[in-house]
Length: 303
Image 1: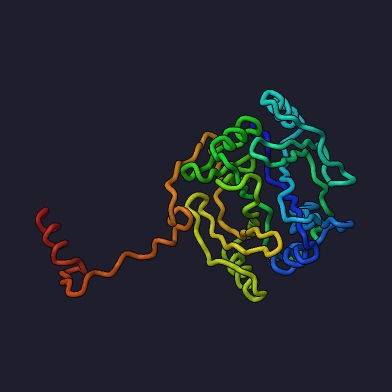
Image 2: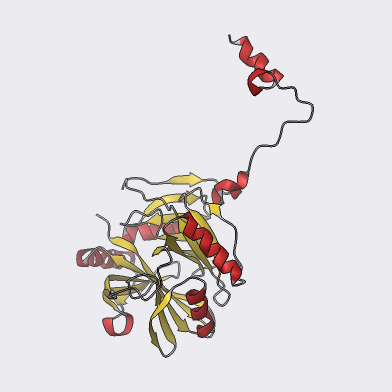
């Protein structure tokens, strides 16, 4: 049985709170669910927060939140943490953080995690309907991808979906999406991007065009080999992170699936990057049925 059900939210520190809130409202079409002095909660659905921004001197990832499958799962995880020698403490509260039944701890790879049983649900989403279905995952840097992978598997029951050499590993939890967190080789604890799941490719393209109209740095569409998703990445200027808008993200139903060890390279990052084969050299003679003369000779020998 899965211990962790889904990715819930990210908490980030930002030096210019107003500018970051404006980006996520205007470009990403999230909406403020609650505002306090120095803290803003944003959502794209009925959950109280997909993202929490806090005013800090420097941009930083503060914490990642994941919903567990229940109180028994939370007890199991805390026992496993104790076996690993990892200290944990009671987490956020309903009044301060809008979650219940929560614990917090810091992984050996320097990522603060909050596991919670429930998050406050709003009567209706304050965000406009723009085709965003959920906050799906984050990718965070670590100095040892393999050690990080093994820790998340041992303590929280995550499963490997795919791995790119020793550079990136994609881990899934109970909801079955290809990954709820990715660990990538880099400066420990640095947030690379946060991903929002859209209802289709049309919505992804609309977000790309919307971002361009607001003069936001944005990439072209890619088709990821690992998750199969079609994605576009927007650059958040204050935090310096990517915001991925994706569709067609694979859902894995086989609990025993342990993924592939993929080779690093452009095609792994973007299946479309290979393009088409080069054209035939000038002067090539084509035979019957569109084949080359050489090809006809080979196929004719087998008749």
